[in-house]
Image (cartoon, rainbow, N blue to C red; front, top):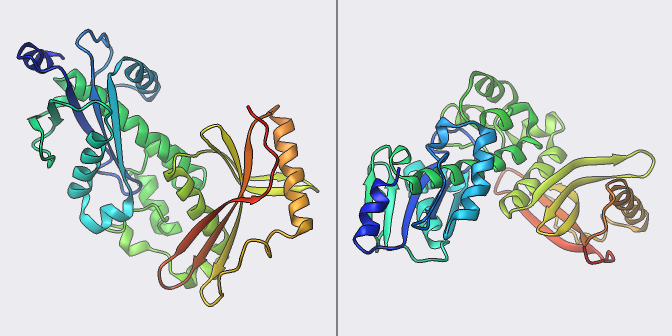
Length: 328
């Protein structure tokens, strides 16, 4: 698995970046790419093509690769960019982003597949590279686990589709749900049969799905920003409910989502959060913190979503309530 690396190391090249992607084929979610630079004394005997190892093993190797690598860069391109540019161009974008996110400048790029549209670097494309190059195999695991974790987070808000299980690929169950339940916001509108099953605004109103969609769209924004979603619709009987609980680095984020429909002017968050509502939210926050034995920084955000027949608008207002902070 080191034949390509040894060839370049022997020639005096020190920093070789293996590059691979994950998620070109699914009907939903992003395409992800990773670039990995390994040291010459690397010891990762179990690393191979991510498709040939179990999910549990990939998770373990993901951590081992991060510990061993000199540098790792990741690029994620989301479904609306895929729809606008096509999946091939989106994959190239993800690869370029991954290389750009390396903190060590690579001298050689080892790329899985036929070619890569990455300029200004010496590179070699390797067919089945994830089975021949340790650097590419490591990149395949990083890209796969990164994308899978995002799909698992999306599954919390779109449980009917089973994203945690199939990661957006076109399984029989997945296809049936698209037909029966209509497509979700993270489905790729340029991939068949998705465009045939997009929900209309009238459908959403008729089935009382407007509020649910607002929460889903807000959650998608958080996931893209790197939040870890912890809870959705956290309900404390006779106290209150919190729409989304997430972790942004070391800070807990409690979010109230308000969805408006076209024809209404944007309102400031204060009308949504009166004194009574604020008290219920604070009580629910306190209940969550105490029940999970937490003592760390937290904040309260408001997600506002404007839905209509045109473009959907989403904005996140951080620190919508002045919550006290204590250091974790």
